[in-house]
Length: 470
Image (cartoon, rainbow, N blue to C red; front, side):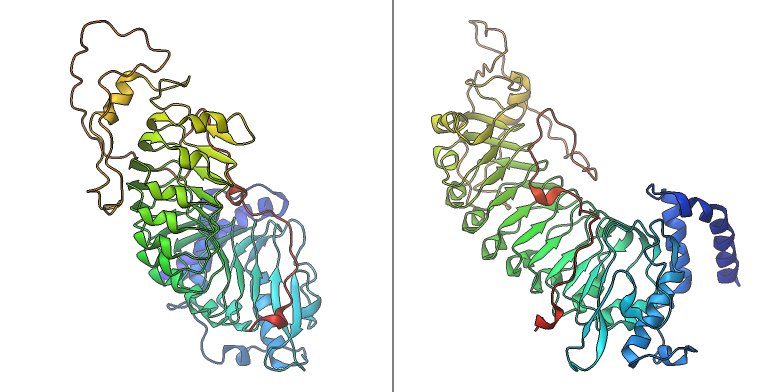
């Protein structure tokens, strides 16, 4: 009875703003997104699954070339009913038995029977559709490509999606999904591309996600927390983005085992401690971004082994020491940003690099030879009690012993230091790191983000030739 009352109440509320949806292209409010999610939950069974044989109990007065297209029709019609706003009329031709002619729906010969035509892909990127995913979507078991980025889809990914065992590319980015990491993806043996960025997923990452044969993994701009699983070292990804979440703890030492890695971005989290020396094993990495975290101590000497790195972004941490020559002279380096740290110096090679075609940003550190540096008091708050990376659990004994900080720092534009000895600075009180927001704090000169930071473009992309999937 309570369930029916809630459902009725939701329906009445929907009638109040359904006309607003039909004409508005603006983002959903939190209340609107919450209401759509509640509608979805009311439509789901307890296990978010469909009863066995459900599709054969649906009365349809239309004939289809095969049963798989019939099931696809049931799924697509159920999805159309779960859509509350379609400003571009993307689904206006979702009528009749010819589902292969539906806009955004792509058919191809079945992998197990070339004589059967089946729905193999969905691509409605950028359609600005508001609604939710019904459990009937699990009937389209031939779908290998599912692209719905840049819409206003709310709620969760139903468990019935685990039936889509041929899934190869799954892109639900830039929507309003909620809940924990969608574990249905762990049931897909052929998945290569997973993009769930710019949603409201939360909780911890399952360690199994790094045991899949993924090529690209985008997790950024959600609400994930906890430590990054040690299983990251087993991952086959070439690109992985953790940016703008609430991850804490160390970078796992197993990171050095990621042989295929080209780009990894940790920006905008609560990660900390010293860097593990295993980072130097990332021989193929071209982008390494750890900005806006709480990393501390000296850079490991192994960073000099990042021979292919083009973007090395270390800004907005608590790093100390001297920026060494062998990092500033990395052969492929194009952008080195170590601003807003506590470095006390840099090799001459770093100054020379900034005069060439390499962008070097060392602002807001504790260096005598640069303008725009931190004040003496701010520098001493960290340098008077440096972290010892040889004992730090995150560094794993691979860090270099930090040099003793100078007694007197005179970064410009400080006034001349008096002749008498300065008073001994008080021992700083170590405060816990500030809570990490969903986006990095504002700075005067933030590092230019690599291309993968941008939200997914709302441009429909045609599916790949699905017959090539093994």
